[in-house]
Each structure stands twice: as C-alpha cells, then as structure tokens.
Amino acid sequence: MADFIKTENLENALYVVATPIGNLEDITLRALNVLKNADVIACEDTRNTSVLLERYKINTKLVSYHKFSESKKSDLFLDFLNEGKSVALVSDAGTPLISDPGEILTDKVINSGYRVIPIAGACAVITLLSSIPRDKEDFKFIGFISRNKNQIIDTVKNNRYENLVFYESPLRLISTLETIADVFPDKKIAIGRELTKKFEEIKIGNISDIIEYYKTNTLKGEIAAMLYADNCTNTVDISDKIAKLKSLGLKDKEIAKILSSLYEINKNDIYKMCIDKTL
Image (cartoon, rainbow, N blue to C red; front, side, top):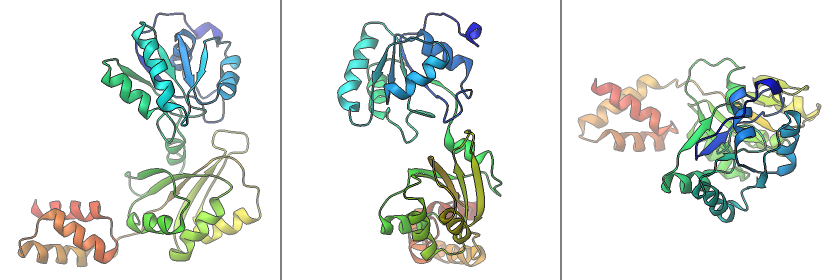
C-alpha cells in the first residue's frame, strides 16, 4: 500500500478528508495521498488520527481541532493557508461536517477566498442505507437525535412519512427507542451497530422487538438508525382537501402548513402534492 502513496504538491486549499468509520482499510488512495502531502492535519483527537497515520506510515503534523476549539483554532489554520500551505481536515471517523466539527473552519476558508476540496470516503449514514432495503430513495438525516423526550416525539411525528435517519449513543439507544415506541409501537426500524468492524450488526424489525433484542444482547459502538416511513393511507382524502382549499384561493404553502398541522403529515410532502395538483 505504501507504494501507492505518492509525494506531490497540494493546492493551497483546505482538503476535507473522509476517514474510515471502523475498518482502517476503508480509506481511498487519494485520501492517503492528501494526508501524506498536506502541510498540517486538523483532527478531532490526535490520538485517534495517529492510529490511522501510523498504519500507513504517514508523518504529517497533527493539530487538534474539535467542537470546543473550533472558533479559536479556525484562525490558526487560516494562517497556514495565508502562508501558502495546504490543510487537511479529518474527524475521528467518517466524513467531517456530517455530525462532526468543521463548519466554522470551512466557512472562514471560503469567505477568505480559498478552495475547500472534498475527498470522498466513508460515512456511516450511507453505509447503513446501502445495506437495508427501502421502498423509496429519499430520506431525511438529522444527525444525533435529541435527548429530550418531547423533542424526540415531535421529531418522529413531524417526519413520520419520511425515512428518518439519525445517530445515537449505545448508552441512550434503548431509552430513545422506548420513547418512540410509546407513541409509535408498530414503527419499523433499522439499526446499524459497529459498522465495518469485526462485530458489525445490522438489525431490521418492529421497534418493540428491537428494544427487547438489545435488552438481552451487548450494545456497544456508535449507532446509525433509520425509522421507516409510514404509508400515507389518507392520500386520497388529503388530495380532496387540497383541492377544496385551492378552490378557496389559498396558496400551496398555506395549504401545506394547515394540513400538516391538522393531520401530522410532513409539510414538504403535502407541498409536493399541492404542486402536483397544478400540473
């Protein structure tokens, strides 16, 4: 593998580099080349990133950059760019800015006139979705789901007709699922645990069954989950109501807001139905 890691001059830019979410072999040659040739690597935890670099015999300088130091450290990396250097941004695992730090830095870099160059690779969201069957392509990703029970319920209610993807800690997963099950006991869910690792596990089933399974089985590692969309059984009824409200002169956005509030259907889904009615 080391023979494929080339020495090359990188552009004076910020490289956003995806790294493995578990299995260290899940990294691209392009990512390795960037990490080797960058002048500095901004990383969440130097200890975690060092494990990856040691595996591939890369000696690039590491500087910590995490959610508690984003504002302060962003200026430091901007100084590197102002000196004509290249900066690579990585997270502990997966793709930066996807529930990981990087938003402040990329914003400052772009506003300062430098390029942000994405180096594609592993992401837990896509890894999960590529391994479970779905009857429609679209989904909504919300990052880590709220810890507040009322907010969890509101989130699920407001997105019940969408495939809802989120991250959760193994310490909170059962509690979160129980909160959802109290309102939606028949919800179908997919759970991805330890993705790409030796003890990888992907479970699909009724949320109540999944809860019982994890009460009696080891629950470790970060969790990626997808709540399956409910079937919209009242589509015809909603279409009739859209037609009625349109006849009263209401605009599509107004109709979507009203019907979403009355029937707990996602506002965007109703808005799409409103647009379809005009075709």
